[in-house]
Amino acid sequence: MGYRVVVVGATGNVGREMLNILAERSFPIDEIAAVASPRSQGTEIEFGDTGQMLKVKNIEHFDFTGWDMALFAAGSGPTQIYAPKAAAQGCVVIDNSSLYRMDPDVPLIVPEVNPDAIDGYTARNIIANPNCSTAQMVVALKPLHDKAKIKRVVVATYQSVSGAGKEGMDELFEQSRAIFVGDSVEPKKFTKQIAFNVIPHIDVFLDDGSTKEEWKMVAETKKILDPKIKVTATCVRVPVFVGHSEAINLEFEDELSAAEAQDILREAPGVMLVDKRENGGYVTPVECVGDYATYVSRVREDSTVDSGLSLWCVSDNLRKGAALNAVQIAELLGRRHLKKG
Image (cartoon, rainbow, N blue to C red; front, top):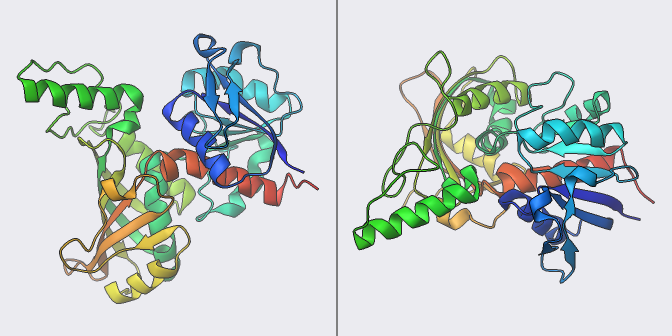
């Protein structure tokens, strides 16, 4: 027996990727529904590469009664309206927006890192998916934290434009083309030109001078991994279509050599270590697109602290940073709580 699954926001980048990954991983499904805003009603989208076409249903009229789980990729606005409705109708919500991440009654889950926390989903019937940049980082940090206890994290992110949705990807493409033919470039989605540039600004500014994206990485890492860890982040938008990269510096309570860290990461769930210390012996965003893994490269000791490491972390943000993690949560939920057959 399989599950009755709803994908909300099915016509967006992340929603389509959720459908692809559900199909790729042969998630046990008896029935699947693609749901989106009224303007997408009646649109047909393919369920992965199965050949099955799904007719998009209108979220405003959709009844979640009898459905087992709903994967939401609709943004905070629609989620605020329809996630509580779905949860109240007995459908477990797995939400990709930031709306519920810091709610104490909603578990924030990365299955390789804190699977046991999912047991708290019954308080609201909602489970939160973390921010894309947080998700890949904690996958890499968890096995190292278990071994030597991380005290402090300093991270600089290099985040692709797909993190800003289709509009972000279109803007990078259109600006790049305009520059090549000598046309003027006007920012629309981003605050400054993104083509051939980097922008140290993602989401809104907060009173302390950090951005909300940076705050998310701090708060979510503490909730998922350990509230005692000190985290500081600088989040930067870069002219890459898909794939987030992170330069991470770690300070540990206990000593941990680079060789030991490499051995740990080589065996860690969800991690792929590619660290050859030679030309091309590392992973870049272009190479991670379409893959499930969180790639780690450039593992090296930091001599400026008693026990420190630096590393490079790359992952497909539409996959591990969003859709894949949501599907992994659904798999975990099925194994632990919604067993069929």
